Amino acid sequence: MKETIDSSGVPIRVWEPSGHPLEPLVLQQARQVASLPITEAVCLMPDAHFGIGGPVGGVIATRGAVVPALVGVDIGCGMIATRTDLTASMLEGRHAAVRAGIEAGVPVGGPGVKGSWEERRGTPAAVQREWDTLDRRFERILGKHPRIKASPARAQLGTLGGGNHFIEVCLDESRAVWLMVHSGSRGVGNRIGTYFAQRARDQAHVLKRRLPDGALAWLDEGTPLFDDYVEAVGWAQDYARVNRRLMLAAVVAAVSAVVDRPLAPGVETVDCHHNYIEPRDGARDAGRYVTRKGAVSARAGEAGIIPGSMGARSFIVRGRGNPASYESCSHGAGRRMSRGEARRVFSLDDHARATAGIECRKDAGVLDETPGAYKDIDAVMAAQSDLVEVVTALRQVVTVKG
Image (spheres, one colour):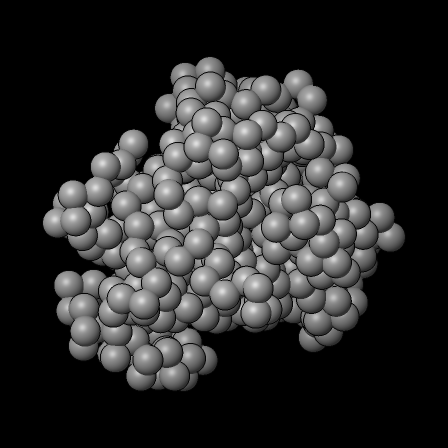
């Protein structure tokens, strides 16, 4: 870890992986965040890369305020993984069937594809039951902020989305089968994040706040808008967690159908967010908040998930509780090039070689997600050995992406 003190007196701490120097734009964003009068510290995880307002892979500690754009629009995005009682031999020769079963059971988004239950057979009863519980709280939020709108929320609950979201079937070192899902709050989280980021901008304009970037407008603790935003973020996190658990249940059902036997999932299950706000606990921490924009909580002994890319290992980890990172770690490998650059640089042959032996899409629509577009996950893990310890390494055999 390297620490510098910004001209504003705010520490900027960097966990930089070997062979992957941080982009100048990322450091510039970190300095802009550090310059805000509400900022206590900025931490850049090993997967840090350029984002809207502030770096993805950033941990930002603030006092008396939060910045909606630093949480982003994929509120509550995160991971869930569970070890099953299956072994690798039980899936031999069935990887294509497993992928087809998952794609049939879980709506998947992507370019030009909405990926909701509206395009399928209708909302399953299990999804509707979960939505009925979430909807009661959501209606209260909409009653105060109707411009958020509700239309995609029910139809997208229990669906994957596109971009870097994925479902994987993995093997650990003992060749036990794990099931993993990466997704968040879908379209409704996007609307919540976009809406409150704009309200913060509007407020900054009224208060004549001078900002290095308009996206860094903040909401002050103790104001109605702050309270409403925190409530909405909490709801979106709950939506995201329910979303992942519904998909995991659908994946369990799909795999069970292929192997023609019930699975016993949950032998070990890990679930973690990586886009959210965490109030700090304790009397001395009153009014202090940690925003993790693409980062995972890593308290001492806490389990977490750090995925690689479509062709790289993923890791189940245990936090070391390092206070320098506000008890945080990376949320993945981190992009080393933009989506547009990846599509220009890599060919379908490159992608096929990088994902050899993995049952997954190998078409032009996923070139921006090809492994070479991401940092070396082993270098990322080595750079944060003071933040987490590796418990289990996972190798994917099936990947489903939008």
